[in-house]
Image (cartoon, rainbow, N blue to C red; front, side, top):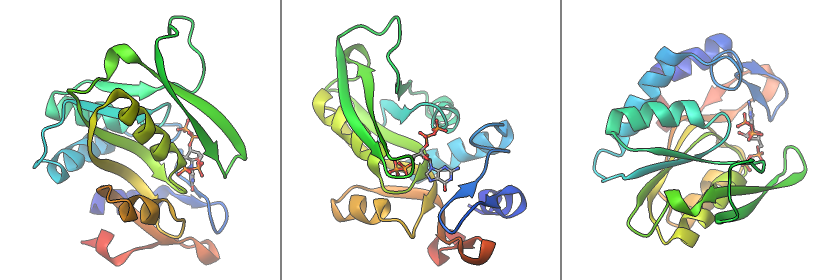
Length: 194
Ligand code: G4P
């Protein structure tokens, strides 16, 4: 997705050979115009599917998911990482280990918002080791929902999440695939340049 590639080149900061900072448009400040285009692009890529629910995880997955939900007219459910006052015990939950942060979090979704009639598209901002997506797939499986695929804003192609998911037969569509962050430079995978 050219617009996203350009934005990453203009505003992304390479913090190390494995971490890309994009807090000026995705992870802290949000660029709504770009998010709108991202929602449109996800809708196009999955236009062959009937989607009844968009499933994501707080916090940075929410903005692109809402734009997609608006485009396709489907509700957005986000998994919570912390216990909420109003969230009951009636939950689907899963454990998500972050290798980046070296911590494991319980994520949860109310049983009221996901069921076996749902066709779910999972959305997240980053795909690194795929742990967050695996947790969301687990929650969808607990609900008996059908997962049509996974949409990612930025996939780090040099980490193995994308490979693992695709090997499991999961359809993964990433709007930008970063091949390398070596020497302080962002290099995109060729297929993502199309
Ligand atoms: P994984 O789910 O693919 O295994 O990812 P990992 O544990 O490595 O990532 C933990 C958090 O760090 C996630 O956000 C993920 O989106 C984010 N992340 C991973 N790699 C990068 C990167 O190179 N750049 C940036 N900016 N973020 C990265 P989170 O903690 O859930 O944060 P948020 O969604 O609340 O913003």
